[in-house]
Image (tube, rainbow, N blue to C red):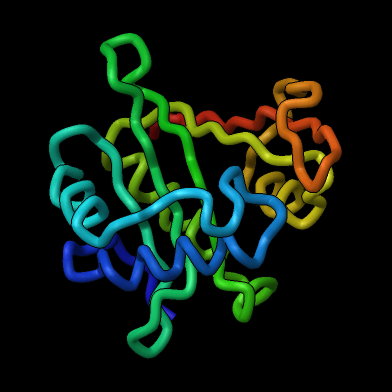
Amino acid sequence: MEIRQAKPSDAEQLVQLVSHVESTSDFMLFEAGERNLSSEQFRKRIESFGEDGSTILVAENEGTLTGYLMVIAGGSKRNKHSAYLVIGISKEYRGQGIGKALFAELDNWACKHNLHRLELTVMKTNAAGVALYEKAGFQIEGVKKHSLLVNGEYVDEYYMAKLIEGD
């Protein structure tokens, strides 16, 4: 398995992976088929990475993308030091260390790109996700009550964050 930054040539496979993850997990923001993703949109986003401090890290196994970690940097001077994260792993590869590997590479990437704060939200009911994020050094900062409506039930989300300390 290789962890690397996404390339424009990954766009089509990345769209398929995101769609697959959204259709096989109740823990993603978007439901299966809720949005139309295009390879062209992803290609353009990947090409713009150097401009805004964002990236997508991917896990690749024998030519197949198996996981992704989107890093969306703040867009103003006051929050450019922070980034919001979205992670997804193919159903067939969950629980095999891909998330851990993506977060390890994220730490390296974040240091090189002067990020100081990494943040995400996770459903309180996603015990595996919460455990992964805590192992990666994230801490719960707060709760968003009834933040999402999943399968007819209101679900709380945790705000989680990690500070990257400079050398």
